[in-house]
Image (tube, rainbow, N blue to C red; front, side, top):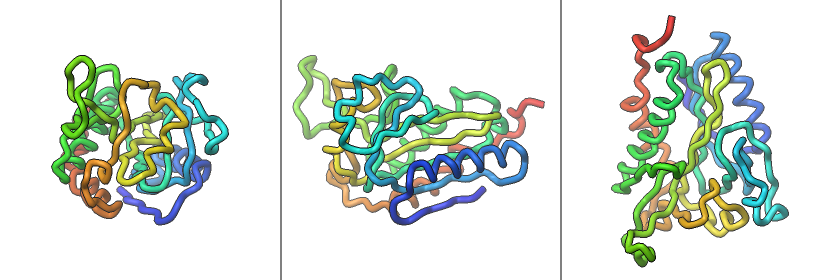
Length: 222
């Protein structure tokens, strides 16, 4: 499998074109799987479930219609975007299991920095509890989103993927209702007080990948 890391800012449409071509080549048996780590310039993407009213500032940044699942998300500098072009057919033809693996991968990578990420029913992404913020009206700990997940499959090959907030400008999220969720905020590793770099996150992702995404050929359908 190829690990591809691109420095600087990658144009969104350029990334989509690459992913679609690579996914097609993987499905045809003409290319190896690929995990691509990159950053985008500031932009908003609309997933297949996006509601127009959740784009609260449509003139702030470019807006791209995306074929991935989910609603509106923000991408920009300081956010590690991870595009996964993987053969889900070799992992059991099980989309729910694959999404669970993505969630587990993010949580494992965050744990490398002693950050406890969690999944919440009905709320897409990975969340962290904030001991440094006031309790909610219901007396619960405040929870902020630190990572987003949205994928698409074509011929059982995935593309799009996940994004982890390392040190983005959190104010940039205010032009949308992230993933359609209004009652919770957004955070990042640096916002949590951790002096983590993009390279640190890349190492954590690579270190935890194999334990989560081991290919089990016994699960593959004939």
